[in-house]
Length: 231
Image (cartoon, rainbow, N blue to C red):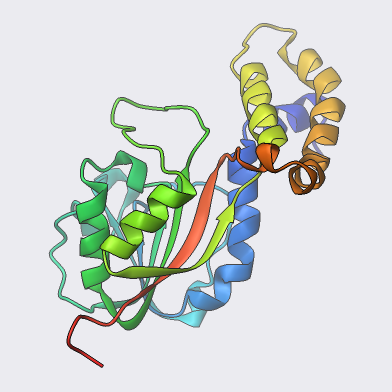
């Protein structure tokens, strides 16, 4: 059984964005069937607490440039050594912001999908830049435009949190990075207030459209559109 310091440390290590992403992926489990390719992950070192429905898929493969993640395919998602229409579902979570050519990468993803294929995609928006190759942030409008230009039609788009979620995400991270002996005490005092703010995030966003215009990031589902000239 964890003591309060361990519990606070565990709470600090998970961002608001990650908690929302894990939760929002649950209703999409039913789409993760057939031949699935997960991009930017591997058999080792999976991020978050979401447990994919491996047993419900015909096959589940991983593609990543990072061989330490133990992917099935070590390759750049922009130029994968895979045939057209190889998959029924692509899962691409928190990856698109790291590729140099996101528009072209989405076109490649579309090529990998079968006729009735679907892409499950998440991207950050108001979230910290975490590395030198973290290049992009996508608004809902911008992401929709990129998907349509790539031949993918969004069928579901969800903003993950609004203004208070963004604020709590930042405040929580500011506590996380403090490394002196009073870190856990500060977090223990702050947690009830931050939890209360997060609890009221959606209600305030529903009342005030300006607050709804903030978000930590976006989760969407897009389907493969028929090629021009086909029925």
